[in-house]
Length: 227
Image 1 (cartoon, rainbow, N blue to C red):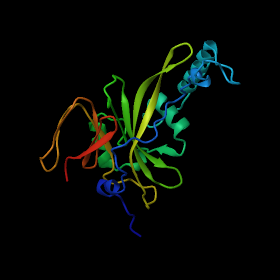
Image 2 (spheres, helix red, strand yellow):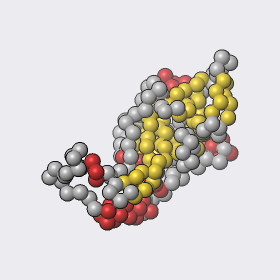
Image 3 (cartoon, rainbow, N blue to C red):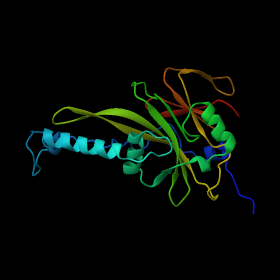
């Protein structure tokens, strides 16, 4: 029986609207001030002390450092996905066709399903990934924005991630190389819609998937740039 493969066009049909962000999660964010009432008096909750917060941050850093290497991902990002998105798995080399993998290597990417760039202009490296939902095979295109998180009391600053699901689509095929399914990241530049009616000048990096360009402007927006 012939295996069914899904092209970017079919994936895009299943995408949810990209004009809004999904629930945005901050890894390990802790604000002890939120445990107090507006009057500043704790209500049956002991305020976390700065030394305790420092130890918590140090413990998390040790966990991040101990995170196994996963498909070329930075350890901090691999840890975030493991902790916050445990139902999703990173796609591997065997999931890509030879052509898609070769093109990704030529672009300097660690994977056909993973690329990096600064999507929001905060000076930190963000990432775009295609992830697979465990047990279902549903594919998710997700942008991970690296952020600095301030933790009080104590004013500690740590690195974390905020994620935005750009789209998802179900697939009814066995685990096999996914033809013409890859993601790439563009540097800042000028982009034109396929009909020539729209020209975008983007000051930050953007995400290219299939025939659409995805760029961040408070939420993810899309522009059809080829057919």
